[in-house]
Each structure stands twice: as structure tokens, then as C-alpha cells.
Length: 243
Image (cartoon, rainbow, N blue to C red; front, side, top):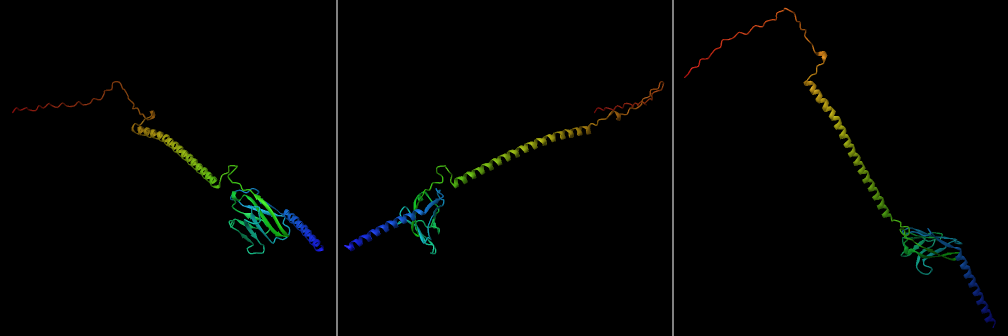
């Protein structure tokens, strides 16, 4: 009977210890926390699952996709190993760990939305979970992708270049027409002056000062000079012979 009573005491003590350890592990688990940075990452961006509140030195930690710490392992990190982190498929090239227990995921998509679990071995086992929501970069606000923005910028530059070329051609045409009008105006007076110059050369104009008048003296009784009359030549008649 004494042996049976002793066995019962051991069972009760074991149960008490198990309950205490369970409460202690839950208390330790509640001490660490994980937050996503940024809180709502966009597609094709990076998100850091930042761990804080770890007690003791971290011996190793593991990250899992989902709420369970038994499957869908993403990362195993041992600070004393070389290299310290081991990445599992299909997360190779997208995931990396940090000594404080944090994990970074790059190039996230909407399929990466969900719950992530970290299990850390330090002063006992510490577990924490975080929920991540990835949103489409061109959703809600009607944002544009990088290619669409580049196309819009190129279109604006081409339009500005065409407008500048049209304005330049218009101004150049206006300057040419104005110069032609000025040349015509300058040519007309010159032709007139040349015509007047030629006319003056042909028909010289004499002024009143250039006219000289000869003095005429009329004397009474003076005989006018007589001019010799031309001698009359005898008319010669040609003989007309009849044949």
C-alpha cells in the first residue's frame, strides 16, 4: 500500500511539473514578437519579419510557412555554422536570416500572403507567429507600373519636341516672308532712282543761270549785209535722139 501511495505522489508531482513547464513555455513564447516591415508590403518588394524580445543567446532558430512548426520549413539558422543559414525549396534565392532571429523575403507576391511561424532556441524554446498581407502595386489607387510610367514620359517628350519643331518652322517661315518684303521695298526706290538718273543723262536739264543771251544791236540807217546771189547755171538739155 505504501508503494502505491508513493507512486501516486510521483504522478501528481509530475503532473504539476508538466503544467508548470507548459505555463512557463507559454510565458516565454509570449515574450517575443514579430512584426512585418513594411506592415503591408507591395508586390515585387521586400518584407522583413523582424523579431524582438528574445531572452538569452540564440542557439538556433527555424522559420515555417503556416501556423505549424512541423512542416513547410523555409529557413534553418545556426549562428555557429558556416554558412549560418540553410534555405529550403522553393524559397532559395528569396529568403535570408539574421542573427537576431529575423527573416527577410524578397520579391514577394500575393501568394506570399499568410501566416509565418518562427521557433527560436535560446533560454528554452520560444515561438511566435506573424501574419503578412501583400497587396498589388497597381490596385486600389489605380497606380501605374514602371513600364506604363516610362511610356507616358516618352510620349510627353516626343509631343514637346514636335511642338517645338512646328513653332521653329513657323517662325522661320515668318522671318523669310518679312525679309522678302523688305528686299522688294528696297529694290523699288533704287529702280526708280536709276530710271531718273538715265533720263537726266539723256535729257540734261539746264538752269536759268546756264542760258546765255547774245546782245542784238539795232542801228538805224545801217545797211544790212547783202549775201551774194548764187549764179544761175544755164540749163543744159540733153539731146534726145530717136533711134
